[in-house]
Structure formats: C-alpha cells, structure tokens
Image (cartoon, rainbow, N blue to C red):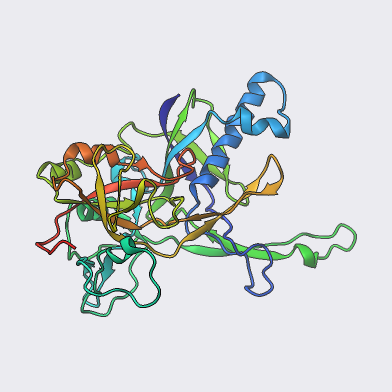
Length: 384
C-alpha cells in the first residue's frame, strides 16, 4: 500500500460526541469533543472506502464483511489545518496541540518549564524507583494563566527548535454553537418530547478562514474518496488530495538538530495508547531509571522528564457488531517526554527525521500515538 495525503474539509462544522453520553437531563445538552479522535476520522474514511467498493462490485456488503473488506485502508496521520480563504493547503497551515511544557505568564509571554534533577522524594508510598528519579520543574514566577489550546505552525516549530519567551499572536480557537433537534408527531403535529435534544457544534468555517484535517492514509487507491460523513451527525466533509509536502518535517527543525542537540524532547500530537499508561512503550526500569528504545531509533535512551496531562478515555461504536468498542485510556495530545542518550552522545538530524510523525504505542494503524521531536539542551546539571 502506498501513502496518500488527503484533506478532509468539514462543510457544516463538527459534532463528535464526548464520553458523557446522550442523557442530558443533568448537563442540559450533548457535549462535543474539541477535535475528532483519529479513530473517528478513520471510520469516516473506511465508510466511503467500503461504499465505493460496493459500487464497483455491484453488490452491498454484509455487515460482518465490512471490517475485512476495508482493513487495507490504514490511517497514519490526522492533524488539524487552518487556512485563510482562497489559499491552497500547505504545511504552513498545520495546527498543533499546545505543549504541556509551556506556560503563559501574566506578562503574556510563553515560557518553558525547565526540569531539574530531583532533590527530594514525593510524599506517600513509592514502589517505583525510576519514577522518583524523573526530573521535575518549578512553575514560573508569574501566576500562570490558561493558554491557547492550539498553536500555529510557526509557533510550534519555533518551540521545537528551542525558541522560548515569545508573545503569542492571534489565538487559534474553535468556536461552538448549540443546535437543537426536534421531531414532529404525524398524529398530533406537535413536538415529541423524547426526541427533543440539543448539542454542541464545533464551527470549522470562520469569517477569515476555515479548518480542516490533514490525513495520510495507506491504501491501494484513493481516487474514489470524494465526500465523507464525519462524526455523530455524519456531517459532510469534502475529500481532496493534499500536496506531497503537507506533512513533511520543517527545514528549521532539521537545522536545529544539525547543530547538535544534547537531549531530545518528544511531543505527542495525537492521543497515544501505551500499555504502561503514561509510560511510552519500549521503556522499562533499569538500574533505577526508565530506559529503552523508541521505534525508528537505534540508540538506547534514558527518560528524564514526563509532562503528561490527564488521560483521555476513548471509546466508540462498532458499526459491524453493533456494540460499544472497548475503552482505551490514552495519553492526551500535548504530552512531552524528554530523553538523553545512554551513551552521552548528541541527537542528530537523522534522529529527527526518524521520529517526525512516527507512531508509537498501540492502535498506530488508526492514527494514534503520533510524535514529533524537539531539540533539548539542558543547562549543566548534576546527573542523578
């Protein structure tokens, strides 16, 4: 199967239901995710993929056939895009989750949480020596305030290259509206109370631009992908081919690693399913530290830092079996892991290429676990 870049452009916003369910008596309405999970995007693509095959073969597939007949379509990447009206999609339109190692101070500047080797143990019962050896970071002196959820390509690439203390530009924010659904009784002509409900809609079209989803799929043919139904309401999204460079690694990041990077920061950009919960697959406790290897790298790593927000509970509905899918406890996008090489050498541009939009953990054929590398040059610190 060959990789194909495509762009999904929602025409009427998005409604991807979160885990609070349809019972809205306490909350007042159905609540939507800020952005669809990769599994939702893959489900939409496999639906139109299977429908096109049904059309070519001149027969509908049985419900049990769908998983097998669409299994050759795999989703590698699913990242947000935002462009001004009239522009052609390109890598500069990529949008990234705000990294967990960034804090916005009262002065309006974004600063980095700089970790230090531990000086004391955490309180309580600790049966994990390696976790106690992870470096920690103190909050910035200013009172931190909530920052934006999304960063532009320019801001994020600058951060990966080591740029700190900048003032954010225009905030990227997805707007929401409330949509009400009602059903009318044919007998009485009045609304049916049991079918009256409302929910969020995440707007993807704005006055000065529009949002979309950049996808890289592995498939034998993508020519028949034209229109998808995305999310709970199967809202229409146009499917168009994306440029070959849409998901390429930035040249500025390669240049930062060509200068040499003492350490490595690994940024999670799509939900990641790790067998060890917050701990990336491939790492295990060795001599009181988390050590191991990551897919794509041939060097032994030592985990120094982990900035991880609260986990996500990701489930869904299996259309073939008509049952809920098993729930996955996933690391939320924005998590940051910092590593040093066990041999003390520096990371190079080749390592950055190997890690750029590489997938680690479980469910990687569904677009989970995408990571990107960032340069890290900690100050002279005493190694624990």
